[in-house]
Length: 135
Image (tube, rainbow, N blue to C red; front, side, top):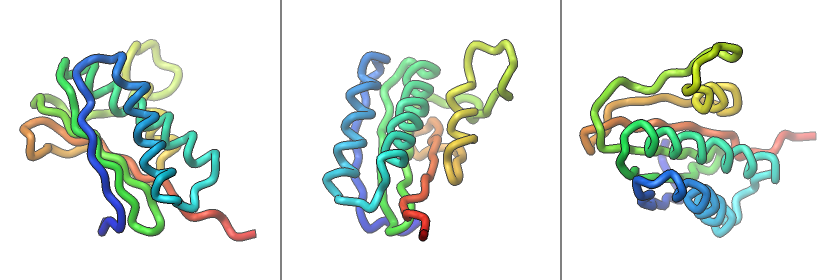
């Protein structure tokens, strides 16, 4: 993805920092005046909160969040500093207490994935479509 716009922020290792990080990501994309519907912005906010909460909760450390726009899609990456297993989803309806955040990402994102990061941990990313459907 070749970004036309990109911005980074650091989220501290405190779960209470997640709501303000979500709001900051929304403020960033609004400042870029992207052609996003309100539903798309709400999906971005929801999924942003899920991947950041996963990073902070499962590592006990902060994470670097990068949001970018390529002219068609918004991409968000949450990069943590703790090595460990790559993220995976938990199927809906299971009794597991965790993993449902990534299940939401899997259901609502255009694409998503996880790979080892340059910081020694992992990066969970997702993309959502920024183009409005033609009527």
